[in-house]
Figure 1 (cartoon, chains in turn green, purple):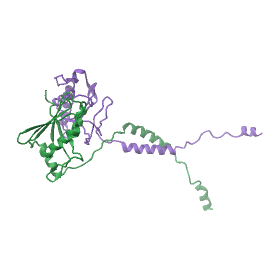
Figure 2 (tube, rainbow over the protein chains, first blue to last red; figure 1 turned 90 degrees about the vertical axis):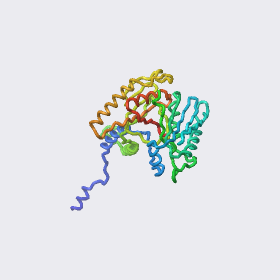
Figure 3 (cartoon, rainbow over the protein chains, first blue to last red; figure 1 turned 180 degrees about the horizontal axis):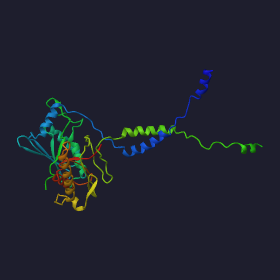
Figure 4 (cartoon, rainbow over the protein chains, first blue to last red; figure 1 turned 180 degrees about the vertical axis):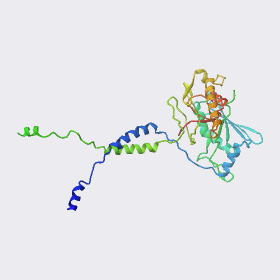
Length: 177
Length: 164
């Protein structure tokens, strides 16, 4: 008899889950998330430097290096490089424009790699843009001078190849009147 | 007779249960996607519609600092407009590098930061400033902004760029 009653009360094994509260929650959360979501993703790649390169970079930042590299960006879209070595000898190089409207960033990068081969422990570059140079060109120059590319010849510091070219780009003429 | 039976028939229940399972599925997918793209970073740097930032290969992540927004029309410090940009300010021939309204706004910010750093040891005034500038602006004008910032105590410039 008991067994029979048990069978009666069990009823149907399926039931409708009430999803309305869940819907309410979703409808509240989704507009909030949509408002605060950032669709522009900023990434970072951690790539520690080899020890000799890191040491040389630190030393250069402490201004213990007598070599200075100055780059002038002219309004006529040319780069003029001025390298002062340890002995105080100044060498001037130039990278002519690619076209009337654009700088030759590839040629400039190649020239910087050549300089880096001669002065591997220098990481600072003084940039002096002319007043008519636009901000886009300045950023592109900083990009060209920041790091080595895969196709570039390897520059060794002690026994480690440096991935950096001239990462410390300084706008040297900001305080000039 | 048939039609009479139809009329006499008890009317069917007018309410019905809406089938929302598929809608919940959809919302769950959207929620997961939004949670993945949600940024929990404390640095709030939203590109403004009034300017187009240059793109760069730089991979350094942005940090907490005072924000200067330089568009072709105006200069903003921490999202507050401090001065309008006129042809005189952007002219490369104009020798006066100091932009007075910007200098006043930055000095006020620097004083505020220094006052906080005196009260709170954990806060240090480091003179860092993130500059968001339109890519078509000339260096003459940017130089004025940087010159003015440096005089106000903000000499550690960070240029905001769009990652390429």
